[in-house]
Length: 333
Image (cartoon, rainbow, N blue to C red):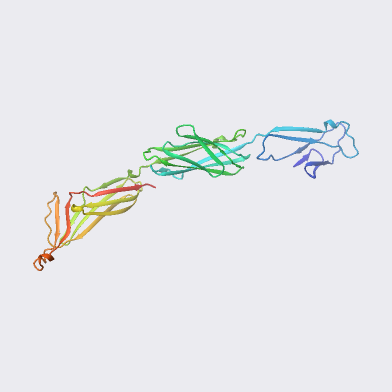
């Protein structure tokens, strides 16, 4: 784009040659022309512009030495780099894997081919690994939990973004807050026009999965009748942490007898397990507060069958000689 203080400027052949017409420039008078160019976002080195005037046909210029003038500028790229970090959660579980997504955006105007990224990762993030979406990022550990490196091989134009994925495992013994701080800087020779968005932070709280309170009775409940024996047990989860996972109830008796039931946990509440076994005949008395032995046996037909036909239900339970076992496996979302 070009315009003059007087007259008209029209391109001739290409934008580097112009015909300045409509002048009436007397001796001692001056006129000026303004040229507006866009600088390549990838420009490097000095920027030099030479302007030359040529007298019209039939007119002789007696001093051609002053017909040209050169202007040189130093090219200083400017880019507003902005960084963000997020692992998609605010609560992490010790012993599990975690993934952070680091996003760098170039708000322009100049294109950058590289940048420096520094990440101060949580001490509880073990075996960190960085994977770039474009280019190459090679980090060096410069502190106990700080990694820095040049992210090269980029062609990040104004308005474009690239991501760096950080993966690791949360220390099984981690407690408290996990804070990840990441910072970006432009390459040498490039000015960042806005330093306020050069640093971003992600903070999570680690949560021990079994922190939910598990309350159970000391021994299983026993319900007796002439036709059945029922064993039952229950467990109550409280704490408001919305746990998930499994509770495994195991009811054991003498002679290797064992009964196992697995309940799926879906939030706080009471979970129970029970087992009912049939009996025939009389049951021995239960003395409150004392361990009781219950033998279920068939007696009504003993006189009608020879000894070889007699049988006992193979159930001998001594309760609560073996308390129930409960295994809790929980995880918070």
